[in-house]
Image 1 (cartoon, one colour):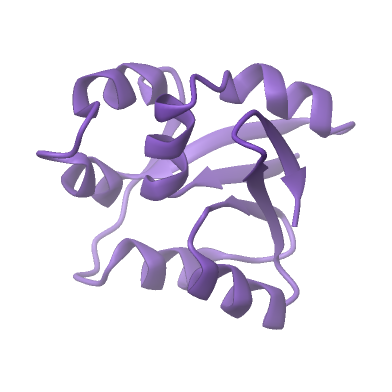
Image 2 (cartoon, rainbow, N blue to C red; image 1 turned 60 degrees about the horizontal axis):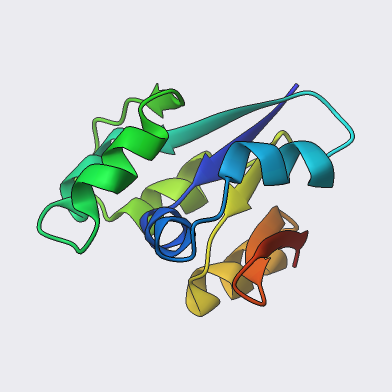
Amino acid sequence: MKTIILDTDFILTSVKFKIDIKEQLKQLCDFNFNISYLDKTLDELKNKPNENLAKTLISNFNIIKTTRDKSVDELILDISNSNTIIATQDKELKEKLKKGKIAVITIRQKKYLVFA
């Protein structure tokens, strides 16, 4: 079972363009997966546009507890392995993940998800 970790920008972009993350991931992935996000993501969502909608969207997903005082991007890089797929819109993070051979999912044409 793979774990798909959503980063903050991906969540906010999904809300902005009304993308059904769970449904899109079911169409994209032909394997079993869990959808998760880091506990620090909730801190990053504070005072952002659509904060409440974003929190509602992710409320049914798994929370990954972190104890380290790093940015969400650094934590994602630390916990990424062959069983994780990172859903992000962050160009810099995508490049770092690809160098580490970590699978990445991104939003294309404001309406669907693809492996980057």
